[in-house]
Amino acid sequence: MYRQRWSEAEGLAPFLLAARRLGFAAIELSHILPVEMLAGLPAADLQVTTLHHPCPRPPGWRDTDMLTAADPAARERAAAALSDTIATAQRLGAGTVVMHLGQLEDDDAETSRHLRFELEARQRAGLRHSKAYDTALARFLSWRDAREPAALERAWQGLQPLLAQAREGSIRLGLETGYHPHELPSPAGMAWLLGHAAAEGWAGTVGAWLDTGHVGAQDALGTARWAEWWAAVDGRWVGTHLHDHVGLRDHLLPGLGVLDFADLRPRLPQDAAVTLEVDWYFGEDEVAASLARLAAWGWPLVGWPRTVAHGP
Image (cartoon, rainbow, N blue to C red; front, top):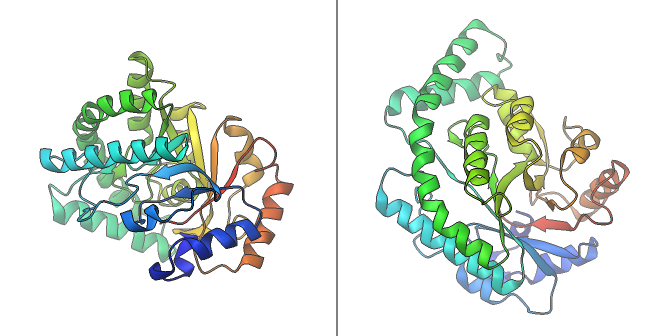
């Protein structure tokens, strides 16, 4: 995300210089990077610890290419891109790949799309606590919960061969918590996936990835609460994207929003990958001030690699 301060024509160089000035030792490569930009990554530059699928972004990539998609061709494209991401991570020496599993498709577009719009619009207008909001939320959750199991079954079937590839390359996969209410998995869906992973011997290869601003936004909507995520994952976090939020506005610097990062710190394993994922418009002085706040709250310090992402 932060790389977007500069034009694409400038490549990664100005982002890498800024990361070094801020004191970062490592970076996360994101899904906005085209093949040619990734090819220009200097071999001796900052360590790459994490890649965000799809990285590099394949030519012609469509956001509807998801492991949860009903269309087999879309699932195949998503799986091929994830395989390439895992291979790229192994080549670059990164130990972690984070990915969005997918989202529910609009089989009843008018109902689901209108409900999502109503929830977000009422929340932004300060109408979160109303009977009308509660009615819309209940209808949306009913729609989501009825359709998620089939989507997760498709995703799990497509993911299993890639888990073998990841294990062979000593790569851990993190399934990211979503921002939009129809993004999967839900907390219950994440518990289902992690349960299958444990039962089939993949617990060390795949886990959950906490995106703090995403979960904050979901909590603000009521579509998934913090307590639900803590219970569903039960400590099985692979890593985290750190950013703050106010209502549905996320990717804020930690300390500018409502999250208690001191409380979040002990909830993650010591070996979790950590990426600071903040918007491009913040100046380096503002980022440095946020890093000082994070240090005062207990992270990321020794044993917690500080990384900065440059993709949305």
